[in-house]
Image (cartoon, rainbow, N blue to C red; front, side, top):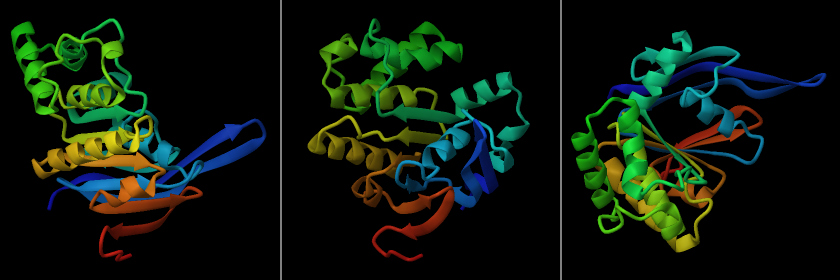
Length: 232
């Protein structure tokens, strides 16, 4: 199976006054195309730093990260921005929707940046909102939607550019338990349809809903297993 994400001895150090924080300390792993994976760990484990590096939002101090055949450490800011928009769909705990825009307009945003014609992007936004169960909410603004509905809009927006990777940061963290399960069911369905999904979470129940869990602690990978088998 083709590899979508390849991390090779990733190191990330931060200087905090006189102290050096070792956020990542030699992290290596591969994620194949079509994987449904969770990166889990407590606060300070390095999982958020790793997510930012996978998403091209931060750069490693040392090591290499290759996504969809592209060494993103070799890209300049402009190329990296284009790559992110084309290859990675982001879903955040806080939804990050623009309050003044409707659900449909929020989903259109990545396609505006990509230069998709008005008619095409409106059709795709409507199609995606129907896909996530919000076909009757196209004209609603975020304040008119529940938390779960807002997260579904965010997922539709993340899918707008047909990304190779859906990268979600604590996607159920702001939701109640039942709504969180609905969102995880949606991720599972998208994965069955071929989307590679990587979820960063501190919640082991969320991680267990995926097929694979990478466990982090103190900047290291301390476990990597298939869920259900618990094989190390």
